[in-house]
Length: 241
Image (cartoon, rainbow, N blue to C red):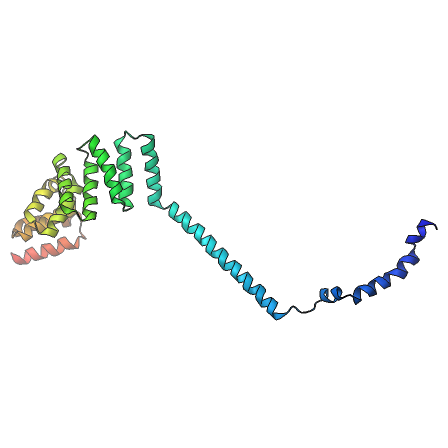
């Protein structure tokens, strides 16, 4: 037989209808042409898809939360200063910076450790003394805080931050004479600092010296016209004259 007879047009046309009819008669062909999917199967698929979406959302949220914790501003500062301390451990400034980073993050014990290193190298470092005093105030150890702030003023009597801290402390304790002793040098050196002038006005008012209180209240208002406490104090002492 000639092999070309296998692909003759007559052969193709006579066999093709049989193949098509056989295909239509098979079960698989019936499914492919749109037999409805059972309702229970559709519901199962939807439930599975929702579960995948929810689980994926929790996973992504978890990664985001961990990243946010790892790169919080306080943690960045701590890591930065830790690296600087490691690079130059003999420099007190690096320990001071790391101590303040710990202090800002509320890790007070760690902060005190760093300030101790600074003060061991230089017991008169006013920044370390002042920061240490603030940490002690945060911890509620007021006697140590008071002592640390006085150490600052012994080195620098006009240190306005230490004077303000002691002034607020003595005002709370109603120790008005101590307040004046602590605050007056810094207030005289920095008349533009309205908070210090107000503290002196308040202390003098509480001690019964209305004239001195009025002077300090007016000075506070001159540099800070919106300082309500000084305005109210000035009205009180004005009425008492």
